[in-house]
Length: 127
Image 1 (cartoon, rainbow, N blue to C red):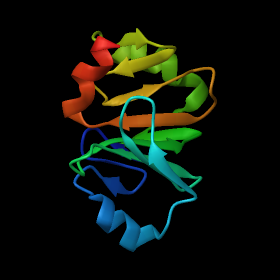
Image 2 (cartoon, helix red, strand yellow):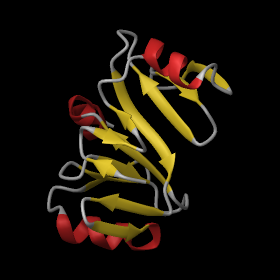
Image 3 (cartoon, rainbow, N blue to C red):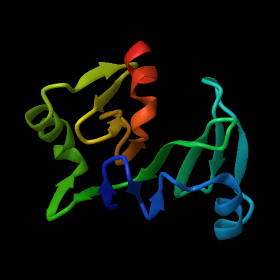
Image 4 (cartoon, rainbow, N blue to C red):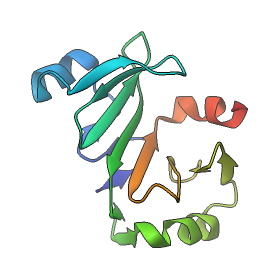
């Protein structure tokens, strides 16, 4: 999956609104409010999480290889890559969070990567 930090992931731009997603993909397999108060739309291959205002917070997709520009990083190499590339990376609730790359992932959950909107980083820091 291609990541353009804070702009897009897996073909979805962070400017996407819930109504536009519904027009594009139709009814999700599951939809509801998650434990942190975001509205999730789960399509099986991708989960998008929105604020009540409709602002997109997170995009989670299965990504065995993460593509960033000309780089292709296999998921099993993502943890050492992030730690080497981002001195500001931190751990929260089993997730390695990279402010420089705009992503979070749990290394024990193979290939699932969450791209973050820049405005949601403080919430991750406060976890």
